[in-house]
Image (cartoon, rainbow, N blue to C red; front, side):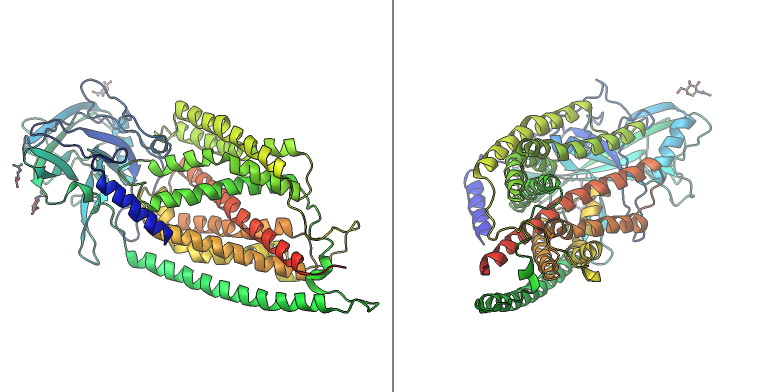
Amino acid sequence: MRSTVLAAALLAFVGNVDAFYLPGAAPHNYVDGEKVDLFVNALTPMLSAKDDAKLKSLINYDYYHPNFRFCHPEGGMKKQPESLGSILFGDRIFNSPYDIHMLKENGTCRTLCTVEDVTGEDAKFINDRILEDYALNWLVDGLPAAEMKMDLRTGELFYDMGFNLGNDEGDYSDAPALNNHYEIVLQYHEPSPGTYRVVGVLVWPISIGGSQDGEPTCIDSGTALQLSDTQNQTIRYTYRVTWNESSIPWATRWDSYLRINDPRIHYFSLINSIVIVVFLCVMVSMILLRTVSRDISRYNAIDLSEDVQEDWGWKLVHGEVFRTPRWPMALSVMVGNGSQLSAMVMITLVFALLGFLSPSNRGSLATVMIVFWTLFGGISGYISSRVYASLGGTDRRKNAFFTATLFPTVVFVLVFMLNFFLFTAGSSGAVPFGTMLLVCVLWFGVSAPLSSVGAYFGNKHGSIPNPVRVNPIPRQIPPPPRYLQTWSSVLLAGLLPFGAAFVELYFVLSSLFASRAYYAFGFLTLTAGVVGLTTATVTILFTYFVLCAEEYRWQWRAFLTGGGSAIWLLAYGIFYWVSRMSLDSFTSVVLYLGYLLLLAILTFLVTGTIGFLASYWAVRRLYTAIRID
Ligand SMILES: *[C@@H]1O[C@H](CO)[C@@H](O)[C@H](O)[C@H]1NC(C)=O
Ligand SMILES: *[C@@H]1O[C@H](CO)[C@@H](O)[C@H](O)[C@H]1NC(C)=O
Ligand SMILES: *[C@@H]1O[C@H](CO)[C@@H](O)[C@H](O)[C@H]1NC(C)=O
């Protein structure tokens, strides 16, 4: 409710102040004949529209990769400035030789360039990429070039970003054919006489075979251009620009790109998860409230004058629950880093909901995530040091040090290794050295000092006092029932949050790996909230069972039980790989598994932290309520 009000207030603010635009969101007004730049981005493997289509690779290639032999601009190619997130997520944007001027050369067939001596080696590289369904990604005035497609179920037209490098099952034969002609349709809107804005970019690529010299026709000749990998050949690239007036205003020009594939699936997923949560929360609160309040009144009602007083259930372990667990250092470091990540996820979702992360700001999502993660360093230091002190740890300096460095180092080493694989595969997706350095500086130069500041304040506030004392001699622990053994409870408890999220997870994986745009942030936020709530309730429930079974070492169990959904995420990722991908290179497999592992680690930290903190809160409440003699 409050966020809607805030959003409305912000919208009103944005609406009132005409000159105020978010960075990158101001319209470019062109005059008749003004040059319109066409930029080329890296080529990405595309999931074709067929139902049984599988993703065949995960490696991006620079547009000017030497084997593609695309036409180079005259003055040499120039890299365009990009945001940090955009670079990390694989954008590599360059200028291009396309000569486009507002409303000029309408419908003229033009030759871009003729590339001679394309060797058999180049041809083999190009054919392999065509077979892997690679797509070209162009940008005109910030808009991606798209192919117009029709939704077979609804008959609705939509723009699918990117267009094919070639066809591998053309009308002519099964050999791959290279698209060497581009029909470019630029839709423009005229808000006031004499000013024009680009509101749509469509490209129909075709393959024109036959003779590659003489006057270009730009007409499908009936033969496709198939490259042979045994001899040198010539490719002529041609294009035709058509200017088409459109009634779409500039402000809504993204709408046809950002079509939610099938909103019904998202609604179904959301209803599914809400049902799970409501059911679960009602169950848990009923069980807990009724049994716990009964327990408490019975404990407190026992007549103190009796000599033999029989304790049972979770009260038995009151002298043990706050005993220092094994490895308090590792646990508190993980909780600290998990809190930092959770805070980052929350604020990112808020930003996404408010519409700040519009697709016209390329890479804004990743940039916002990194920046906030960095700024939230203080949270990890503070929470880690307080949890550490409360768990009975004593080596505060070591704790502050590990909190600030351990997790970034693990992530950095993993990313560095994946980068190495990308680099050896000749992919442009490898993060450039300068960007790596910048991320390093952000992590170790900003986040780590903030973490130490947080640790300083955490130490100042000290430990949270325990409501009951710890007995000097530890109790015997009876063997737990089967369903409460650590691994079975972790798997069992993880299933519910995972079940609430797995439909949405499918879309998230598709957007991460198959470069599909993701913009269902409303659904994502609600799903994230549901997952957080489910994780907290399930973990509290399991902690209660564990304590009732007289197993008092609940701290690590709470973290692992909370993080159980990460194991299901990993399993689902493998299922996604088997069912939706047929990766043909070792590098792609390593990349997929590496990124999946990273995703699972992050999920584990976040959900584990939620589980631990929720259980900690519940255990404190529980033992504050009973009377100990
Ligand atoms: C093919 O092209 C390469 C350079 O691109 C050249 O070195 C080679 O001599 C050419 N081969 C033939 C048979 O023309
Ligand atoms: C360009 O040509 C197309 C048809 O070929 C026509 O529909 C369109 O109006 C023309 N645009 C301009 C700006 O002349
Ligand atoms: C240009 O726009 C008109 C109507 O707006 C549409 O019918 C026509 O198909 C468009 N042309 C192209 C090439 O997209």
